[in-house]
Length: 108
Image (cartoon, rainbow, N blue to C red; front, side, top):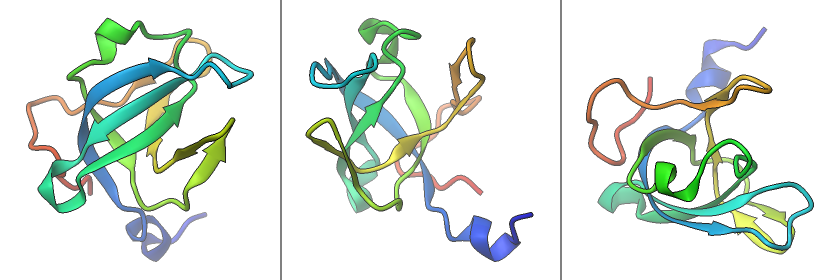
């Protein structure tokens, strides 16, 4: 079990995907995403293994939930500065707010 203090330590925010590029150096099908989290946080680069689930056009301007305070991780030469939240194994769905939310809004 995870205590509320552990959960509360995660900084989960709404961001808008600004740019999507193929991550050619990765072994698995991945994208390099540029996500804007509002003026307080700015933009971050996030590497995500969703290339075989989403087309680039589906992702541009999509508002999504991300964890932004994970330690950065280099994935096939690119530093990923967060993690998008998604559900499922085979039929993957990115978690999105059910109404328009401002970039940088915190998820509680």
